[in-house]
Length: 542
Image (cartoon, rainbow, N blue to C red; front, side, top):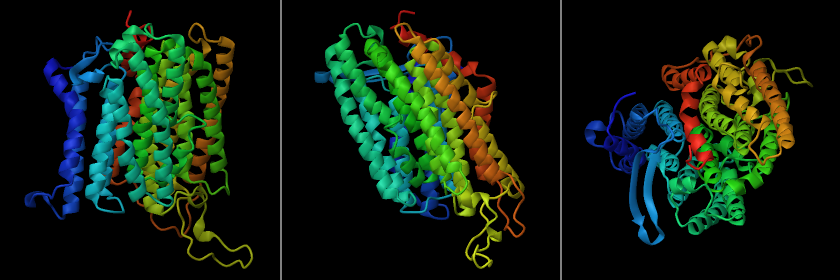
C-alpha cells in the first residue's frame, strides 16, 4: 500500500466518475489528423482503450492508497450540497464494500474496450459504440461510489440507455425485442424503487446513506421500513435478477454483443445486490428481517430453476444456446448472493460480496470465451458445437448434408488453449475449491446454517439444503458442456481452428489470474469487506 493524501484520493474517485463522461464526449468529436492512424474508426477505438485504461489505473492507485487498516471507514470522501431544498448532496466515498466493485468495473470495461479494438463491433459507427461504453462505465462506477439515495437512483438509471443501445444496435438476432424487454423490466422496477427511496429519505429526514446506516432504522417505524423494503427490493431484485423477475436476462444476454454480455453479467447485475447491502440492510433492518425468509426462498428457487434450465439447454438435441445457458447460470449464481444477504449475518453477507466479485470475474471470462468461439465457428448452438458436422449424413438418402461445417467438436484437440480456458472457467463457475467461485457460495451456505437472531433457523436450514443441492446441479450442467464442446475425437476433415490470439490472451489473463488468486487467498477480499459489513449490520456501533 502507498501513502496518498486525502485530496488526491478525492480527485481519483471523482475522476473515476467524470473521466469516462469526458471521454464519451471526446469520442464523438472528429479525431485530430495526427491521431487518426489508419482510419477514424481505429482512432476512436484506440481512444476507448486509452480512456478506460486511464480509469483502470486511477482505480488501482485508489485501491493502493486505500487505508486497509480501516476498511469500514469511508475514504476519499467528497460532500457538496447539490439541491439544498431537498437536502440532496454530491456525497462520494468508498469503503471495503464498494472498493472491490469499483476496481472490478474499471477492469472489465478496460478489457471490453481492448477486445473491441481488436474485434470491432459489427454495426453502426464505432464512435457511438465507444461513447456508450464509456457512459455505461461512468454510471456503473457512480452507483458504487455515491452515498446519497437520489444520486444512487440516478446512477442506477443512467446505465439503462447505453445498455439498451448496445443491445439494440450492435446485438444479434432478436436484439430489438431483447433491448425493449431489458429497459421495460428495469424501468418498471425502478419506478417502485424510487418511491421507496423517497419514503426512507423523507421519513428519516436525510438521503445520506452514511447517516441512514448509522441511524440503523431507529428513526423509521417498522411499518415504514416494511413498505420501503418491499418497494426498493422489487427494483433491486429486477436488476439482480431474482427469480421470478429474471426473464429479461436470457434474452438480453443472447442478443447482446460480447462486451455487452461481459459488462451486463460482470458489473450491472451487481448494482442490485450492492443496493441490498448498502441501503436496505443498514437503513431498514427490521423491515428487511420481515422479508428475509421470502428473499431466501426466492433465492433458492432461483438456484434450482437456473440450474434445471441450464441442464435442459445442455441436453443433446435441445439446440441450446451457450450464451443463453450462461445467462441462466447467472440466475443461479446470483441466487447464492441473495441467500447470503438474506441471512443478515456477517458470514452470509461477506459470502454474498465475495460471490459478487467471483461471478464478475468468472462469468466475464465465460462470455469472452463464448464470443471467441462464435467468431471462429459462427455458432453458439451446443448441438452444432458438439457434433462432427462434416460427417453428418441424411438419415433418408445417406448423402452428406450440404452447408454444414464442423463447429467445435473436440476443442481440446483443435484449439487446446481455448478449450483449456473454457474448461477452467467452467470448473471455476461450478465452485471448485481453490478457485474464486468456491468461497462465496460456501460462506452463503454457512450463513444460512446459522442465520441472524429473529430468523427461523429451521427454515434457513431447508434453504441451505436446497442451495447445496443446487451446487450439484451446477456441476452437472457445466461438466456436460465441457464434455460436449471440448472432448471427443477431432473431425477428420475439420478446417483449422485458430487458437487463442495475442490480444485475447492479454484480455483474459487478468481474469484467470484473479480467479486463482482470490480462490487461494480469499482473506485479501474478506479482510476488506468484513469490518465494513460488521459496521453496517450494527449501525456503526463497532
